[in-house]
Amino acid sequence: AQSVSQHNHHVILSEAASLELGCNYSYGGTVNLFWYVQYPGQHLQLLLKYFSGDPLVKGIKGFEAEFIKSKFSFNLRKPSVQWSDTAEYFCAVISSNTGKLIFGQGTTLQVKP
Amino acid sequence: GAGVSQSPRYKVAKRGQDVALRCDPISGHVSLFWYQQALGQGPEFLTYFQNEAQLDKSGLPSDRFFAERPEGSVSTLKIQRTQQEDSAVYLCASSLGEARTGNTIYFGEGSWLTVV
Image (cartoon, rainbow over all chains, first blue to last red; front, side, top):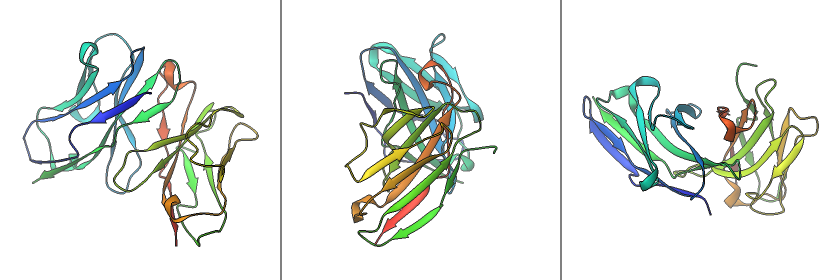
């Protein structure tokens, strides 16, 4: 069955530190990959998505993610975090077969000012 | 409306009571999804509609859960004889076309259900 694993459950960083959040999925076929963010008290918002083409995807607010097919990974990165990046981050995958968006458990990012 | 709208935003139900949660997707969006999000967890897929057709209901946890979208727009998630383990945020999402073909899925703010 399709699944998504996020390695870090809670990450604490100081402002200006670099960020990398891990995401691995299990599915052998064609997948589309997403990162969503949920700021406190707000709804889920799309950060970035990968469907095809360049495996390095750039999203909003300076975030990027790299799809490494051989590693079944789609890690999220940001060179320098800000206090306003404090939020819950979710990796998600859709398989071309099922069309269902499946989420990981999420990573809580806390950025200290 | 501008986004996916859900109501009620907050619902407290007594155990055994039936509840109905409403979702208004973005106008013109064909696909509609329901998710359940427990505290500290990622959203769990419940069911998926394309227009009025319920294409996948594999995530509905029991036969107490029922979803419908009779005219292909507004959807209702109904939970019968609520139990404490049903306490969660119920998220609705919609997309213009099929999500697997590149359409972005937009989420509502959720309906927070507490069963006491």
